[in-house]
Length: 73
Image (cartoon, rainbow, N blue to C red; front, side, top):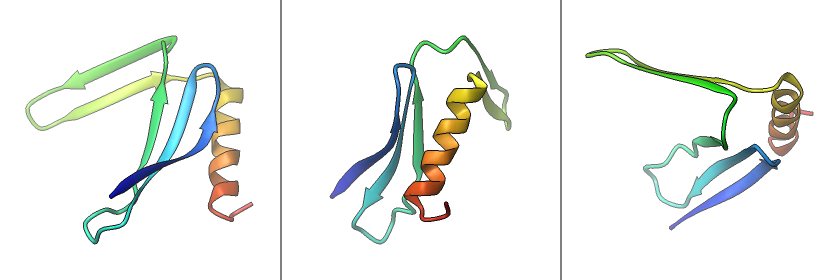
């Protein structure tokens, strides 16, 4: 059984913590960015990366919501 707990949402970004009720899940965080202004995917034999440009205010609000949802702020 699995569920996605949304902790941030805007026109461009949605962020979730994946909640699972089995022993194998570490409850990862997913960030979905719709129509990013800029992005780059690098894939080499042993190296993979994704770089996405996100507005500073948008990222700040996402971070604040993450801290609040985890009782840090």
